[in-house]
Image (cartoon, rainbow, N blue to C red; front, side, top):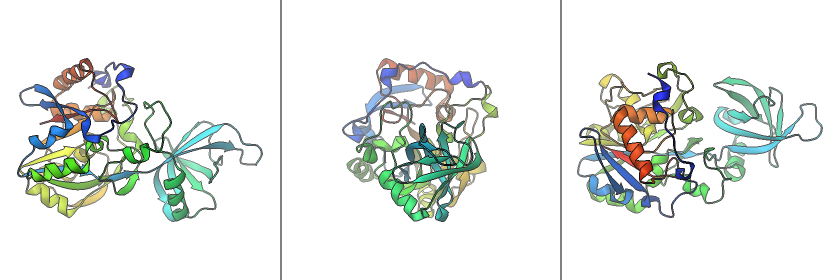
Length: 346
């Protein structure tokens, strides 16, 4: 299967640069994957499409203020150099303030390099695989690093949002159920929910269950291999708690809110076994040909060309149907990507 099969041309003006004033005001393209029929709707209408015995599963991972902007400093001292950015991804030795991170410019931030900010000095220790580096926050405890990241770090908005983050992003680039810190990108399908919408869903007789999958940078990278089968996912930490496993086993339908939830549930249901509580890492790559065991319906945003997320959606709904649905969404001027509109695939 060729990665080029998942290319498409998107007008730049359809890339949402800011969230809507109300989370549930987004548009929702509803697709019946069995009949191939779709209809235009709104997220606020979602409760009417759910009912007794349905289980809506959300990802409660919280986005870290993980982007750090500073200046390069020569290891031997001297004047500050050019701009540098560090995106901390996951702790390697949390108490010691040592993290795995993406750095830019990567060619100039070799092992031993220093990055200076107004609140920290960060040393590049070495290579950590997958294009990452190991970095150390000098003279800061792990607790101090976490505290300062929360107050002084930048929201890691994706590069297609062509503006700097602002104070509004600190709230709007989190879901209302985010509570477990660890992601470097939002599980964006969850951004459409507010508390009144969740209350209406529960009044319909549907349950809302939570799991955790900490989103890493590998999820959103385009597939660079010409053949999809040669792509390897970066592992991400996840947990399916006992209460969620119980809710799913007793559900009439399981509706995944986002591709991260799909990957966690399908990992937990490997080989068609009943969902059971578990935690660990998953590098599951879902592409057309994958056999789904856990998920009956999917709420998901519109995704980048050649992304593993688009391939997962195509695996769930069918390549041709997804291709035609995306073309319809562009004609109807849907808003794309993280702060954009969504699809409900049933």
